[in-house]
Length: 269
Image (cartoon, rainbow, N blue to C red; front, top):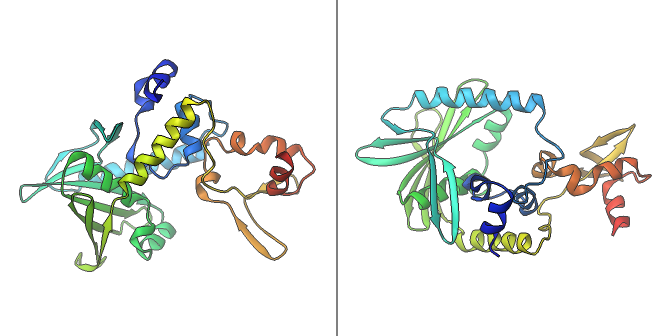
């Protein structure tokens, strides 16, 4: 039985579909979602307030764009053997060309880090590339808006099938400063989700794709620490995962006599 049929029996169709914003989510967390597993670590009130604050700033930025012809409409596209469901932040019409605008509101330290990072290390790139492929449009813009001071910068995307020219704009005068060529890894994306399908169909949990490092100290769980002079830092995908306690058995680890999660997991095998 296909994943689509299995999941339609368990939950509604909306949750089966793939969102381009989740391309870099851990396959195991997607498996939990597809099987309608209750999150062990739902978002905290503080996280929800931060998200709502980001949404309001997001709306404000969209309102400042010119020639907007669409904003926040749900799209559902069946392609490459999957159903994709998503919202586009804003579509603008510039010189008779439709441009997808993907807007990210980030804090000051994140803004500075992203501005100085090579483009191919930014997960948001794949999200916008897939939007353009699914919508069969050739131009997009990835915009980063600083929540602290209102500064922003953008990457312009120019698509030719699965290949992209990407140009970074200077902060001061919005002129091009550097460009990249990039290819969307379609085959990898397809194979990855087929493997997730297979795991769900066989009733198995998909493998973990990120790492959680935890140490107990004075009845606290530390996600960043030093041990024998070596620094350990958990992947953020695990730290903020809604299923991390269930996935890594943190409740059991907290009650055990082991001081690090790696020791606990080793003896659990």
